[in-house]
Image 1: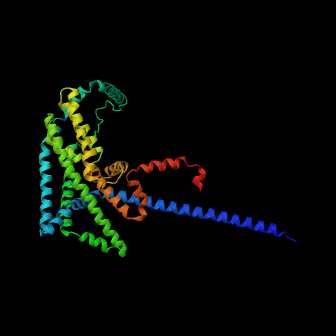
Image 2: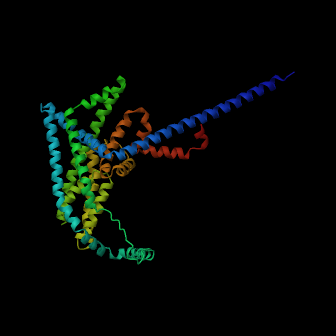
Image 3: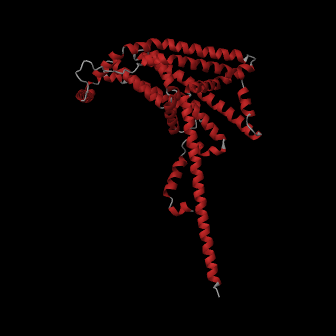
Length: 400
């Protein structure tokens, strides 16, 4: 006779082994699906980034046009309430932007060309100011020259021809890129005109393209929130930067710095880039002050004044006026500036924060983007407490 207890135990062991194999198979299938999903998403992201880089000549004007239209859409809408035609308001805005651009280029052409002409003299003055610091660099440069002369493979044969490849200068590069820049600006202005005159037509087309009523309602909320957040941020920051540029230009004139108008424009443009723009402005003002001012102590005053103005603006004025609308942590802002600057250059740096605001608004409305919403959100005191609790938790608690 067979033992029923042993048979039962054997059956239980076999079923447990089968369950273990099934769990292992399910785990492997889950890992395979996750790896496949990650690979597909990664490939799609690489393709999108490559397309954005290759097509930046057409993508950048479109993005700039949408951002500018978001800023001035409330103005056009307010004018329509007072029975002012949208076309008239849009034409006035576009003409004002065009005139401002031409005035800025005309006003900056003289100082910039003067700096380019005085570049050799400025370099000599900087070398004299940093003579003590430049001695090790001069020795290293001489050593490199000696190594290059020793390893020169050119023979004394007169029939041997040397080919010297020279890179184009900055002026020639700017001249070559000028037609493309003007074409992009013209395309942007035309798109701004049509976007402002169309009113809510873009929103209506966007909503009708969604499949269900719930998606349409959510899409409409997202569109209006994006317009409100981006327009409020850009309008407020632009007003703050204009005032900051006027203040810094005034102080640079008082401190007898060359071209104070240029410093005001530079401060206004650089301040559109959070944190990094102020640092770049301080460094540039410090370098020019070392060349323009007689003593080193006096040369430290202009960058100190520039830094004080930007600190007051960044720590007091901007938080008071912008408030909690820019609910994005500083690390995400810096990473966005680095990414879009690497992808699109200077224009990418300027549009990094508005694009980050658009991404944050979309993440706040879409439930599946909770992780992205958490990554972009501001830092809270409870985050550090949570990290400390997780770090101090024993392995048994984690497994439970």
